[in-house]
Image (cartoon, rainbow, N blue to C red; front, side, top):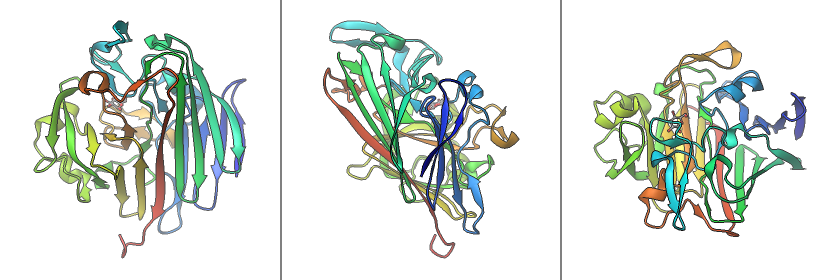
Length: 341
Ligand code: BGC
């Protein structure tokens, strides 16, 4: 069932999408996922994503808590690219680079909305030619559908000129239901390779095999076992803030919190998961009066390769005029008995 639960001003609204397993609260502001409530193994319901109590804080904060990120998620080297022999300059908002669509990217835009049916809501937005420096009038649609234990996010877009597009959702998960450290969570990532970064978090062009590194999550691994290792890549990012390249045909990441029995499975049509252990959360106040510190959550941002425009021979991030961009990512939340887990 979908219900509008709050109209904050003339433009910002909150919707609850609810079934017997989950209640997801979303806003048309940045298509933000504000809360996801689910049971634990003992039947206690709690909220497994970070966020803020009021929508005003989303407007003035960085961190992209729960938001859709675009036009281009992640970093673009020096905020500069060449497309069809034309140079484009974007906002430099992260060291020397462009991050997450710029100053007023999609996370900070008010979307229109339409309730499609009992379990699906659609948000749509027209991003004007040269908005945040990107070419083309771009129409985007983001739908959220709740199907049993799964939240399905579908992205659709089309542009009237060649442009760049790389959408993701930037939810911060903590399956304990509190903003405690996620070091006690376990992670499995179907990726044999990850992208090394420089001191500004930008992929430096080296793709390393995860084998014998702290980035080997090919088997289910306790996050603390990875983060306690002495490693230059971990040091540069103050934790994990790296893109994992999915092995073919199984774009999946699984996160467990054993104590609560909660398990999240992220599945996507997108080829990469940028995994970020919230290393730059700064003690800010979030929901329920909690303070959010580094490593109090984990983001699993499915996307095309970071800085694809510079790193890929045929950059997947280019969306040709008239071509339809269609991708989807789903979050499945389950409660697993201790014996089974
Ligand atoms: C980036 C981080 C950044 C965070 C919040 C992540 O996707 O990789 O470096 O601090 O988003 O902006």
